[in-house]
Image (cartoon, rainbow, N blue to C red; front, top):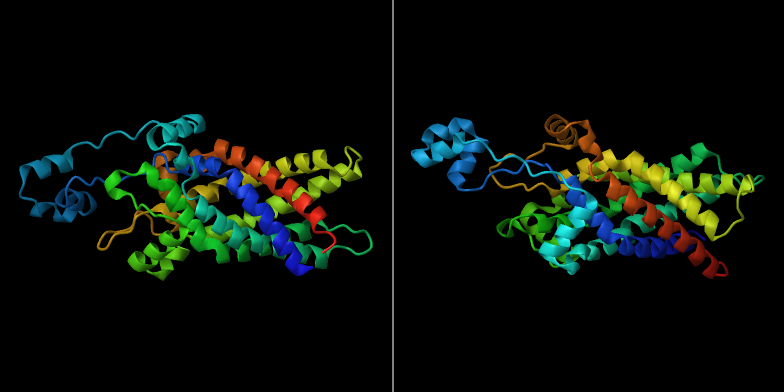
Length: 327
């Protein structure tokens, strides 16, 4: 029974992840809007920007002028439709599926683990007399399952974020990963094995919040609909409960998701201080530079993606359960 839960959850998650991947890509691009980019005209000017103490070594008048010249204003923030159109126009239709191999790998590792563990805990913690599971236990099961799943799937998560964000970078700065495996291989060679778990604390925190809010609220909404006799157990109930669960998950997880995206995507170069020293530093710098609502950047595509993703996930899951009920 335990293995069956992993298989059912894995199949549903992969289908849901692939079908909503373009929306996830738009969300990532929007979350990176407004992020500071270090000038890279020349190494001397860049060093002067990063380390003012070394500006005295600059002998070029042009370099000095460039150092004191005002930085160009950040680009205006645009909505999800504009972001999608820009990706289509500048990078082509295939770009909307940039990083889809990483999505498949991520869902295989992360979602399969969390869905399977949640199913096991649900079976163990459900009251045998009433057949129901208290909300607090549902939340606890989601927190545990999400945390473990995220720790397992973090390398694929980092690869996915980088592949999705690559198209927004200048050609000279793009990483040009060919696949999720290539991304993980290059990161290991160039940045060390620990880079695969960059932002893992954020991934774990986000996954715990998402899984607890998504799975627990789905079960809770479904039970409520059936108990009140609003609808019978069928497609209508599954869609209503899953979309409601997706909205709850999006509201709860978006701030963590913004910080996670920025920490995972940051470029770390030898001899240069990283843009962020950690999650808290990223949050503080983001709020100072862009305001508190920056933590809800990409919320529209988040809910636009989280809603359909959750609907596809649970509707598919219910159908897969019917198919595999005799196994």
